[in-house]
Image (cartoon, rainbow, N blue to C red; front, side, top):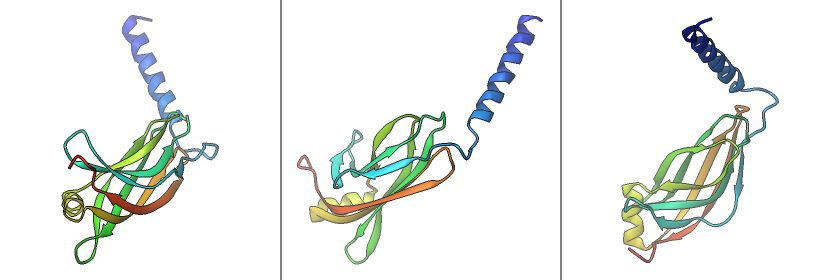
Length: 146
């Protein structure tokens, strides 16, 4: 067997191992979400504002990235509004705090009013294919550096 045939055989074996290993199975552990505290507003690295949700997401070490979404809602000037939303990726074997960047509407409201009463909903899907959800809420205040 030449080097080219060996390399292609190894590539096919690797693809098969990955595709078999990442399929959703009944024995896989579920993703986990836990409420760890109150939400708070923070400055992000890009000059905007983000909300630390006060929710910890954990993905089991099954070789599959856990995916999900988060949304922040609150009362606008006249009616309820979506202030932020985004996707979440949690690497296998890792626990991480969930943070969502505020949309322009949310940033303007927080700067104008100084504080906002919000509700956060987080959903995370694990290797077993089942989605878990967690909600948290509270009042966020404008960071002092604004």
